[in-house]
Length: 64
Image (cartoon, rainbow, N blue to C red; front, side, top):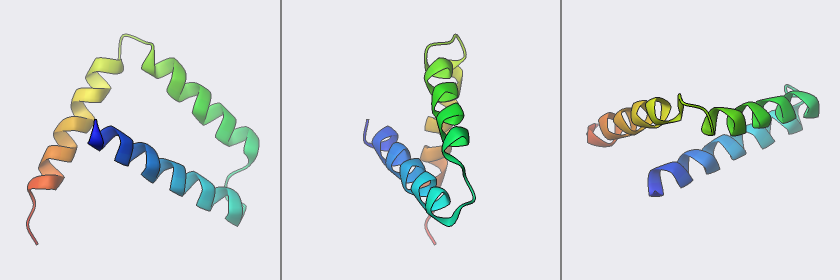
C-alpha cells in the first residue's frame, strides 16, 4: 500500500511539473488519467501491479 501511494504521489508531482513547464497540456493529462483508470479495471491490472511491485522491491533492495 505504501509503495502504491508513493508512486501515485511521484507521478502526481511529475504531472504538475510538466503542466507548469508547458510540456504537458491539460488535455494530454486528462487522456493519461483516463487511460490509468481504464487500465486499473482491465484484466492487465494484476500483471502491471506485479511488475511495479517487483521493480519497487528491486529498487528498495539496492544499497548505494
